[in-house]
Structure formats: structure tokens, C-alpha cells
Image 1 (cartoon, rainbow, N blue to C red):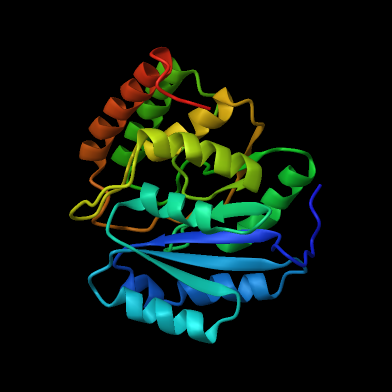
Image 2: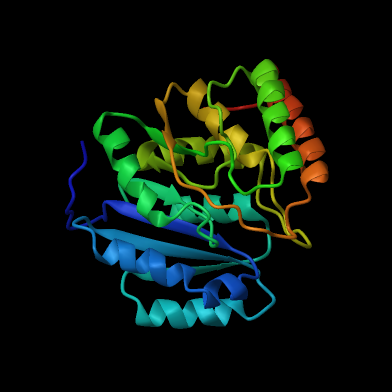
Length: 255
């Protein structure tokens, strides 16, 4: 059970990894996040992790932070979403850590459902999309196929591992990402990086560490993006699943 008001640490840290997100910023996605949190009875902070944006995003984030309380910006070199989330986790002060996408495909208001899971003693709460309404049919079919493959390879009892709306206790998050960082040290990259195996790996590590995972149904709206190359990412995701299994069998993970 977590205290809603703390003198030294907020109840909730919201981490938003951001790479070239001027369009979503102008649609007011960050304003909606801040407005929701400002209406809550618990203390909170927003950590905006700029992933080496090249389109003017950083300036917008800095201006936003200067005019919106309890918001700060981490300016990282371009290393991909996984590294951005990891940096946010280690910089966070909250008892609960949530990461969410800039486009708010799952709106921040869905965190209301997560709070019950943490009250019940779960260590992680994972958003679960029902049928992915609005997504192209071929994506839904491939996603279903990946669920089957993932279950066969990893025996991971989480149906939707890829929803970009996940939260964990600070203790769980730091332990998971410490183990993750030993296998995936941050390094510069070029171009957008979806990191298809990232979500699966942190959930796999969480389960191996004995943390309790709650899969929580959430609202989700399909957001069209050119960054997701579905067939390419599906192949990359399959390779990542095999690598995760290999690392586990060869005791690469340290926790």
C-alpha cells in the first residue's frame, strides 16, 4: 500500500520517451497528461526524455517544462525508446513509475485502473488492448501470430506485451532495468528505433524475478505512424524472442 502524499518523493513518476514529436506536441498530448495529473489527489512528476530529437522538439519540451509545474526534461543522445525509458526510470523519484507514449494511444486517464492493481499488491501493471480496434487487419493477424510464437518460446503469461502503457513499483522497476542495462548498455543509433523486444524482455525479467504482474484492460486508439515497419519489426521481434530465451538458458541475465 502506498501513501498518496509524500514529503520527499511523489507517488507517481510519469516517463514519456520522445523522439521528433512536434505533431503530437501541437495536438496537445502533453497538456492532457499534465491536466489529468493536476486533478489527482496524489503527488506526481513528469519526466520528458528527449531521445536526440532533430525537429525542434527539445525546445518545445523545455518551454513546456518551464511553464508546467512538476515537469522536467532529460536530454539524451539518440539511443532509442528502451534507453529513454531506462534513463527515465533511473532519474525518477516516484513510488510508482509509469511509462506512456507521446501520442497517448492509451490515454493517461487509464492509470485510474492501474492504481487498484498496486493497492492489491501487484508489482507491475500492464495495459492490455482488446482486439486493437482501428488497426489494419493484417497487423491484427500478425500480432495474434506473435502472441502464439511468444508463448511457445518464452512461456510468458501476458497476452499483450506490446502496449506502450506500463507501470511498476520503484523497487521492481529499478531491479528490472538494472538487469536490462547490463545486457543492453546505451549506445548511439541513427533513425527511429522501435525496439520490438524491449517490452517482452522487461516483462520476462519481471517474471523471472518473481514480481507479480497484473494485466489490465485499457482503452486504446490506433495511431498511424511511419515509424512502425510491421513486417520488419515482426522479424526483429522474433529474433529478440530467441535471444531472450538464449540469454536465459545461458545465464546471461544477472539479478
